[in-house]
Image 1 (tube, helix red, strand yellow):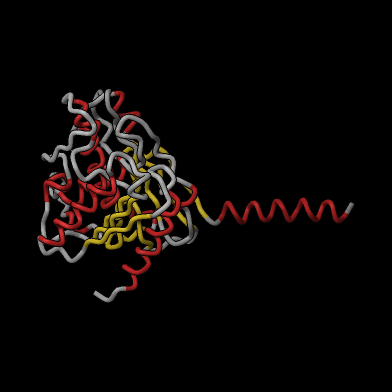
Image 2 (spheres, helix red, strand yellow; image 1 turned 180 degrees about the horizontal axis):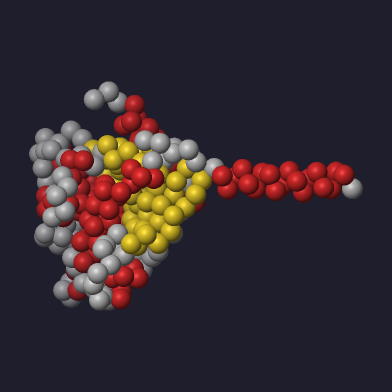
Length: 270
């Protein structure tokens, strides 16, 4: 009987220790809620994962995938550890809104992080943007086109690195669909990261799945993007292809690789 109660006590103790190791702050609005748009009020929120005893921790802003038409801000379990604050931002989705609303929302959420994450123990000098698929596209748009954050008086040079997982770098297929353009017809316009080829950017570590298993030539468009960036003189960009992994299955190994690369970045001497 004593052993039974001892086991119960240990289980409760372990449970409390596990809970104490982290906390999550949910549904934080990142716009000032002074307008009458109910969809904006309900959708434009973020969740924050905070390790215990957080102080001056690196921050990863994570944008979910779902083709700009679906998805949720719930933080993937594989992202959670004791070394990073994770912020996952929801954004308004097509067809309820059209472009560039979701890019504007992404910029507003990152602005909120720059202005507020210190109170949760985050260090904005070590802020990383990431996301899978459509989320990677949004992270890449904010990194390549500085105008989105500049509207909020933030320089995108403050981004430590952008590490997108299987992003679109041509114009996103949902944006093309708004204009009745087929998803196999490539477009490069103001809504394409590839439209902003340049020598000077934050660090970009581009990760895709296997070229034979990826979605809609995703590896090839990223390979061309990286090649053009290097030809422009950009020394801050690299590309990884996760062989054997499809668009959907590359997420987990991609996150593992992302953490390895972040560790290398943080150990660099500036």
